[in-house]
Each structure stands twice: as C-alpha cells, then as structure tokens.
Length: 316
Ligand SMILES: Cc1cc2nc3c(=O)[nH]c(=O)nc-3n(C[C@H](O)[C@H](O)[C@H](O)COP(=O)(O)OP(=O)(O)OC[C@H]3O[C@@H](n4cnc5c(N)ncnc54)[C@H](O)[C@@H]3O)c2cc1C
Image (cartoon, rainbow, N blue to C red):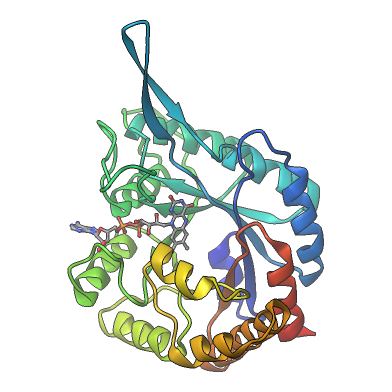
C-alpha cells in the first residue's frame, strides 16, 4: 500500500517506524531482532535511512587514491528483505548526495522492479568531514529537484525520450522542520522551500523530531496558511537517556523544552531517567493524537527497546 492511501483512509492512526542499516560488516539479524520486538504493534510502514559515502583520499607509493567509504550500505536490499520477511510496506529513503540524475533514475528503476512504491525523498546529510552539502556533478542540489525527477517518472518521463515508457507509481514523502532546517535563513523561507517540494509532487511530509507540541502546532498552522495541504506526520524520538539532552539538540538542530530537561536531570538512576523520558514522549504523542495527526513516525535509531516502551505506554 502507498502511504497516501493509508493516510487518506483515515480509519486509524498510521504508524511508521524508521530504522537504520547496520554498520558495514554487521548482520541484518540485528534489525530483525529490533523489528521482532516492534512488529506486534502493527506498523503500517517501515522506513530505512540512506547514508551517503564519505570520500577519503589515501596515498600509496606516491599515488593518491579516492576511496568512498559507506558506513551503512544496504538500504534497498534491507527494504526488500524486510518486506519479504514481515509482509510490511517499506519506505526506502532516497537522497541527492552522491547520486547523479542518471544514478537516481537507475536506482528508481530498481525500486520499481522490486515493487516498492513508497519513497522518502531527501537531500541528505553531508558526510562526516564535509562542512556543506556538495551535489554530485549532474546531481540534484535540493530535495525539490529529486521530487521533480520522481514525479516525472511517474508520468513516464525519463531523462531520455523513450517510446511507450512505463510510468512508475511512487508515493513521495519529504522532510519538514518544525523548528526550521538549520541552514535555512528563517522559518518562513524554509516553509517556502517545503512548499516547493509539495508543488513538485510530494504527497506527504514527515517532520524532523521535536519535543514541544506547540512548536509542531505552529508549524502545521503556518504550513496550512501558506497553502501546503498534504498530510503532515510528526516524527517522534523516544528520549530515554540524560545524555540525549545534549546530543539530540547538537546532532539534529532541535531544542528540548525545559520541563523535559529538568525532569530528566532530577532522575537519580538511568532507569528513572528512561521512565521519565518515555512518559514525556507518551504525553507528547497523546497531545498530537488529540490534535488530529494522521500518523506517527517513530525514529527507532535501530534500538527497539525505547520504541517498544513508547508504544506500550501509548497503546498498552
Ligand atoms: C524524516 C526525515 C528522514 C531523514 N532521513 C535521512 C536519511 O535517510 N539520510 C540522510 O542523509 N538524511 C536524512 N534526513 C536528514 C536530511 O537529509 C537533512 O536534514 C538535510 O540536511 C536536508 O534534507 P531535506 O530533504 O530537508 O533538504 P531540502 O528540502 O533540499 O532543504 C535543505 C535546505 O535547503 C534549503 N532550500 C531548499 N530549496 C532551496 C532553494 N531553492 N534555494 C535555497 N535554499 C533552499 C532549505 O530551506 C533547507 O535549509 C532525514 C530528515 C528527516 C526529517
């Protein structure tokens, strides 16, 4: 099923889980173990992140070699393996970084042949050691351009003119930022760029994580005022460790409200901090459900335990 079909049915909250490929050399069984914990909650979709390779240069015998190192390969293979094992619909993430338009077209054809019809279209994070996003030669600079390429293939328009070309049928999701994307000059400009992605053909939006309901509400209200009408699914990160009060804002350019920070700081043990974090995340999800969100997208970050505790707290 496509994400937009599930959202439009409006008969139940659409639950999606985001997972990350294991580090290169590790086993996919780690992911299966995570999903074994979480599949009893009947997620409608599982999404798999995509990671751009870091390019390093190494010298040997006076020659400099360009070596791409991808820490977490396997997004498409993992998507196919999970769909096969759990009979669940997949959303592979798809990025601009590291792809020319021609690579993108070939990769989309692979997904089409695999019968995967959902894609989350992103620009992608820049790899470790890089200070800004550098598009590939003949690649896309912004996610809106990637959305446009996918939407064109949905109409049978490939990069070269092909006779009787088959239309793909991708349902396209894009990222939104309730606290603005860190590179955007301001919140309004970032929303304008979000609207460009929707105007190019995105069917729905999944947000970056946030911890304050009012931040999400303001984001949705302003998006609607600007004419963004597609469903907006909140991205939820269960918070469980005191350390995350520092690492999440630093790594994801988000803020954590004071009531959560002070409650976590009062915890005497790791277990107590975990309980407080899960309780706060459950409260946030309840506020969102009361507000009428069409779904919840949970960032599992490969660890099933925190997501399991959150879903137990929410749905029993
Ligand atoms: C749900 C979700 C899943 C994610 N999954 C992954 C993943 O799997 N792999 C990964 O590497 N990263 C992932 N990310 C992170 C994401 O790739 C980064 O946040 C990235 O920096 C921006 O991606 P984007 O698709 O939002 O980019 P864009 O929409 O292209 O926006 C990037 C920046 O450019 C600005 N901008 C857009 N268009 C223009 C324009 N025409 N002119 C000037 N400025 C413009 C925007 O305001 C924004 O500041 C995910 C993020 C979310 C929210």
